[in-house]
Amino acid sequence: MEDRNISFLDYIGELEDPRIERGKLHSMADILFLTLVGVISGCEGWKDIEYYGKARLDVLKKYLPFENGVPSDDTLRRFFRALDPNEFSKIFVKWVSDLVASVRDNRDTDDARTVAIDGKVTKRSFDQGETEDKEPLYLVNAFATDVRMVLCQKKVEGKSNEITAIPQLLDLIDICGAIVTIDAIGTQKKIAQKIIDKKGDYLLNVKGNQGDLLEEIKTFFEIESESKYINIKHDTFSETEKGHGRIEIRTCTTTDQIGWLSKKNDWVSLKSIACIQSERLIGKNKTIEKRYYITSIPASAERILRAARSHWLIENSMHWVLDVCFNDDQSRIRKGNAPQNVATIKSLALNLLKRAQPLVDKYISIKCLRKLSCWQPSTLELIVNQI
Image (cartoon, rainbow, N blue to C red; front, side, top):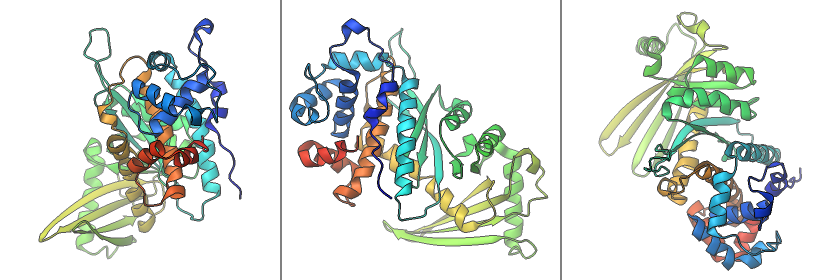
């Protein structure tokens, strides 16, 4: 199947320009395109982007006219402070939804669709001024682990409000046929219901915030493991990973025989429970950690272990990359709507860079690819041709 041309610039016509008509020296497309390409190429602030645009104006003009040259840093700053972040996010979601569908249509692999949901804070995106927000930007993110792409972001007022933000985020994305994985804070009955209503499946980590449920599941696995599950129908799958001077053995045990679970009927479509044991050997030191899950998928140990493992890709392939490769935690863009809008730009840039990685060199890091796009016009154009 041929790739469809999924151009982000085709989507921004739906976006309302926040500027008054007489104040428009540069088109909205020019501003968004310049900012996106600048972020892809390593820019971290408004002045960076202005200087970058002046240095690469010949490349930019291949795609857009830039009739009045490059927007100044003040123009960029004012525009992104005023732009409606919710509307901009909706445009991003539409674009990435079509892009992900196209990528999945052309994949050679048949990896299970898994959507990982987790929160991230941009630590320095706050202001101590009396009239400004004092809290840093906190976003709940949805990440398609099978294609390594950011699907959506939702701003929340602090970590405790993830519970209310997650259902709103789920309303924005297509999870039909996907396994949705969420850490313990999202292990809530209403969130499970929302996932099932949208024709997805859930794999939810059970910790102390669901104390009674945790105690029942933990006790069950402790007792049955001692007797080798002799009277319990169950499934077990193990995998071993070696690297970085350590050996890790992960074993998932799951069962659908949960009629004894007192809170079984509180969780919609609950089909099985699971225990994942991680045994780490570093030299002579050994540690064992156990995690417990409830899920709406059947008791397949391998499938559950794969889904649980893939959840950590949102940390390794998104949050870690934003912090280390985009210097996200050090960003001082903090006023008005700018932090949230720039977070969307970074997610857009990350998706494009990840898509370009195998075309440049499958071993190249995102950090190096950003540098290369700045140094080498051919690499920049390869990435920009996807926009």
